[in-house]
Length: 311
Image 1 (cartoon, rainbow, N blue to C red):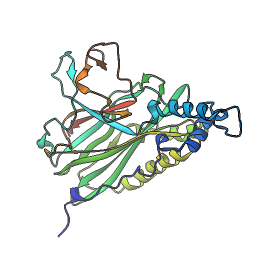
Image 2: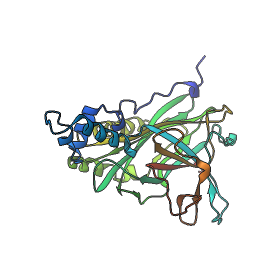
Image 3: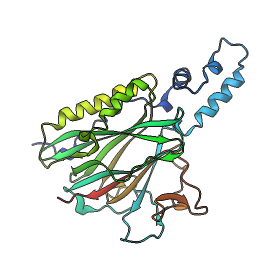
Image 4: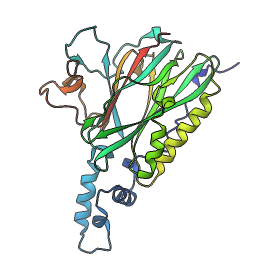
């Protein structure tokens, strides 16, 4: 008897992408020098003028950089009533009730926010955001990936809202799982490659069917190949990576599937953000601190939206 497709292990397609936060001190020093951070002279141990204390202080500061963190915290913002501009609470998505009517249905995934609080390098950042999922069709699964590049200045949001990623993704009876990675592309030679990701086939999102599509496999292989190739290039820096499984269970540490917005914030620890102290303001479209509405979330983060697919 065939094993239910949704119970098969999802192989993480971004597992071999090494984040900058996972580098050892020697590799990190070389990488930062390559992208113009100007610290190679500090790490040159042959220079006796650089004391061990200076080097320790330097690496201590680097370890505190937002882009050096490898942990993510997740938040959830519920659907709001039409026309309401009242601030909305942000919850941990493991504390919400799942929408069981989404079982064996189709959903859309859209990117609503991409915040570059601080990324390595200088000037305008070219951020390649990649998503991967398993489209559960009939008695099989097909791997699907989608990548797009966004130009974002340090400390700002990308000029996007509602960018289509997966349209009509099929959800199994156990839920859906996907991955995401971001790469800061600094290598000028790679700008031509990024231009390909801005062509119409990539910009329209990946439209999926209820049956397997032969064209999906080569499209996925090409996209994934581009992502991994750029992640390994000398001057390019993988910054964020996370895996997220959304299910219908009531397990204490699971995360539920429901229509609404999911936040993935790059943080130094899993207790860095107390979501009850933050809120989303629909009138300005921004997450702010409840005690000071001029204070925005001080982390790199992205927000994606889950909605019900309508044919």
